[in-house]
Image (tube, rainbow, N blue to C red):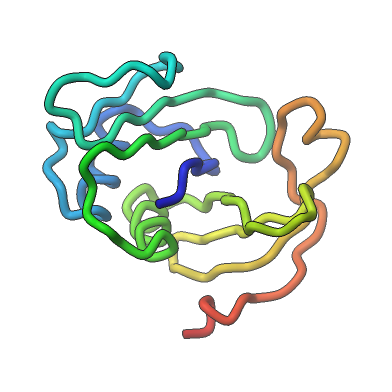
Length: 140
């Protein structure tokens, strides 16, 4: 499962829970959203712990997801569902060795490889400077 989603807008706790619950097929009350607690924190009965952070830049909300008891799912499918539910785009890592290369997922499910600004990244900001290509998954 993915670990981090960088949202193109701020979202409140209820929106985050609804979007992730729908995408994962679990109950919203089994999702705990916190403001940056240590990874060792494990609330009783939680299936998903979501650490929420606010950052400057084009993608102001970072969700760090820690799954405890979540069904096996295709990460890109979940990310697409979250983007659709929140009506925002997000950036996720593309498993590339290039730290400037990311995937942008839009609310309509399109996936595009993008480059982020190196100087902004050093300041912990995510700013797209160039779109590369639609990925194969985006055309499916």
